[in-house]
Length: 175
Figure 1 (cartoon, one colour):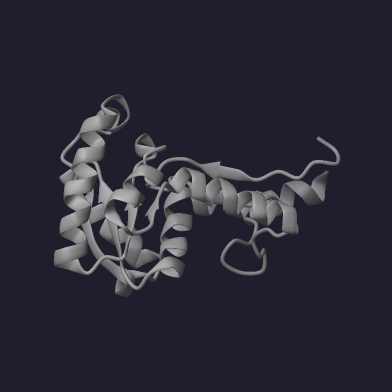
Figure 2: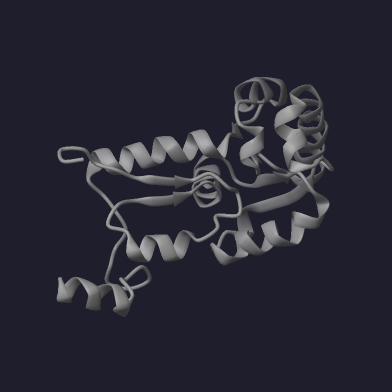
């Protein structure tokens, strides 16, 4: 792919394998959760992260803490829907997001909503109009940020956190 710049977006809100992928890659690798959280921080004082299942709330809270953004978290709220339902039942999903979003704004002080599952892609614009706050579709946001990084010629630093593993360095030296 000579002449083209590339980037990777991992479209799962748990950002699986992101750190390892950044270590071994020479191109930008972004997870939709990490990007959405950082963009939410630019758009408002506190954000609400919505997740399909209540059982995932602790994992989402942990992810936010791991990224050093706990002070900006208004709440993590569950839609009480299965992941596949969020995509297959758009009307039910939008209704749940609206109800939960209104409560997060009123009760938690949330100023930005994050749709914490790739299955909720495509709902953000309509929901933002109805809630009166930014609603982030993490997949779309991550794609645009990846495009910007690629266009700017930026990628992850390799001198610390995302330095290449020794086994990869050794392989390159033998080639």
